[in-house]
Length: 494
Image (tube, rainbow, N blue to C red):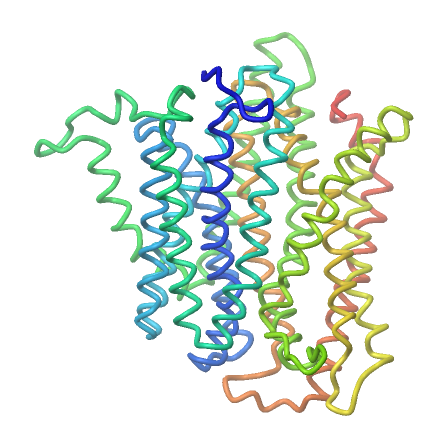
């Protein structure tokens, strides 16, 4: 572990901060333009575009489960992050081909690359600190700000360039951002070199076939996984069965591992805690499936039914996604202080109640579109303020759930199961993104030709957003009602 510190933190933290910032710039740069590119350039209908988007983002969140395991056992974290970053930039540049085939191949490279990068750069951050180091939470908070600065840059700069000068320019800019992130990560390698597990593992150096090591084979194999992603994006209904099967398998694994832990330690808490974790995974899926309308139905709604004129300048539709990272950066530190103060006063809500309050705010965001309906202009567009308040409520809801959820997983799982539990938590995000695409497909009355009138489109969007809002309120009520039994299953975890 390095002794040099910057502002009380290991000096490697800022290298990882900027590397992750540019990786998120790359990922969100692709995401911010994807639905509009599918609908406007490739002439896909809304429903088809939403399902493709859902399959892509679902696979992006599932990939770190594999990427983390391969880095732990064979690749080491540094090699995995560099391989992932190079695959992601390659993916962006492949999309510049402009054809449907090149898009899906590029998306495949982005999925696999993200699996290596995302899983392992966060692990390095954790490894910079000794166990029980009080600076660790603060270090992750700083790192989380880097993620959101990257997202903010992507949803302003890439969104503007992509919609103003051409989608290819936007995707190219995202790819350049990723190369910059890799350059920063590589050039600053000495600053995080002492973190355990960074270098290639001994297992990875073993020669296994035709003089090739495991690292060589995994690297080559990673490129052969791209066609598999291509097929899964196109035949996305297969993901219904794959993700459901994975959820059942992971849930069974968690409960049986918890029961075994109880037997070994002669206590009766781990199985209950694993059941609680599975319930929280279901709640997490519900929240994020609705939250992730940002990249699909809410962007198309902004494109067609939101008045985006500001003093004579028209904000690009994709750029409305910048509200979320902007509010995260604005409110993030306020929330972290708020939890500490509430805790000191003995008024900190339980984890189930935090999840419920987060879902209530998400619901309120969707229901605010009803208010926007009162101020519709002649072109059947609601004011831009409608989206501003919607995203503000969605972001405050996210802050009730996202950091709390990550912290909760580490507390609910026994130490030897920490990786498995975090993999399960990532799986809930994968399922949520996929389900989010299915929900967005329901809002799509527009086919590739866009034959629905502005008035009919507006009414359909508001109707579906309101339905989502009311369903979410019902789910929040159920969580509040099961708060006490759920806390009992958690056995003192707060």
